Image (tube, rainbow, N blue to C red):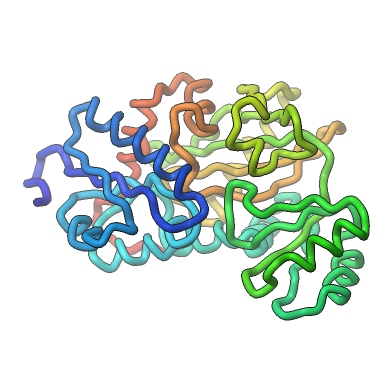
Length: 319
């Protein structure tokens, strides 16, 4: 049952799900649940794929969304929670949907004056030669092919030559939504933004150095031996400030709530190119957001409290 007024809220840590990011979500959910219980909150872990999820989620005061990917980070879960009147952490329906679509979110970011890479959308049902010709004209080589609505570098392919590009295009299911953008040589950087007391706080940027791959791909992200973190990132002060201000601008322009994390490439010359936003970043202890928060003097339990406090408990409408 839900709490009585003035009692500690009964929190559901919503995790799992059926996306390709299920494993990452479960790690986040476990870490958040342990933190909440350690801090004295009444909490339960709920997997959105469980048969009793709908009944169980109606019994709580607030949903802490420790989940990512399709059917979770794209506005669908948020719409369900809005409909049944359960407050939740993170962004609302519109910002979640916009952030999940990498092509649309780039358009929104560009409208805020943020530099983004060129985009070549792959038309559903088009033949391979036509797609290859289109991408060579719109983007050029080298390029990266990405799913429009996936996270964690899932499905990404780097093509430096025509043969690799043709083979990659021939393999993908174009009906699932794909696009391409130039492969920008540089350092992958991410920057978190926290919504604290109605003020947006950028965290110290974190740079990632792949140790065995050409770029920060799916395998590198999930194997600690294949990457190194540096936080704060080792950049000149003006580059760091620009990354932070850009992350805040994207958060604001997309209408994100609570927190977000933007990914960038910083070239050797100091050019900053925005790639995408994560409206529900991973929340494992060693993950990017927790690492950046730690560099800002925010320990993990404090971070969890801050994110929980950002849930809209007013009952008012938000897009």
